[in-house]
Length: 88
Image: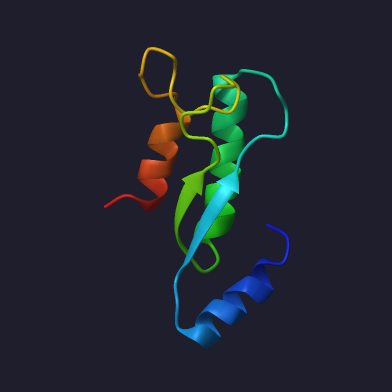
């Protein structure tokens, strides 16, 4: 995550928590394994720094390659990665 050290220093200085938002794969390929790997990499970086949670980019996007929900409403595997990383 570019600039994460500066972001974390500012959050600590301001006494606020940080949420990682608008992250996801670069490729416009619909692939559960690519989305899961990309999500897990972002979550690991966020969790090992100062982030208190994460909001994936385009949770219910019209573009199926970015969406974390399938057109039938079911979750793609990356949804459970977010819950495992920052869930209760």
